[in-house]
Amino acid sequence: MVFLPPYFDELFESSDDILFNSVINNPDHVLCLLLPPSKNTGYNLRHELNLPTVHSSLQRKNFIYRMLFKDVY
Image 1 (cartoon, rainbow, N blue to C red):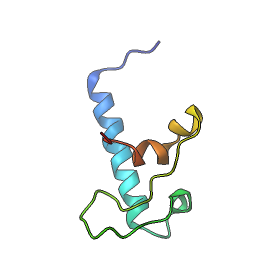
Image 2: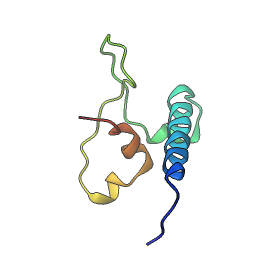
Image 3: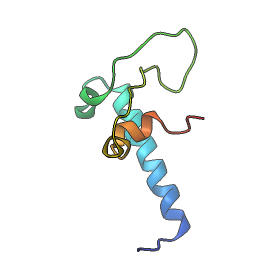
Image 4: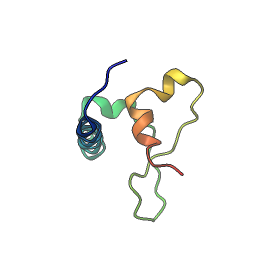
């Protein structure tokens, strides 16, 4: 097991947020094809994408799925 200083978690999280926001805001981004279809709710949400059903633990580890379900309560 590798122990990293606490600020590495914050660094990784902020990098993930920056990448995910660039994917959402740029329809020509390579990873944009992996996003689920968008929906229009009329509300100001973090992202307006249909949340897919996660069927396996492998999908839960996928970057796109992790970011779509981040902070879901």
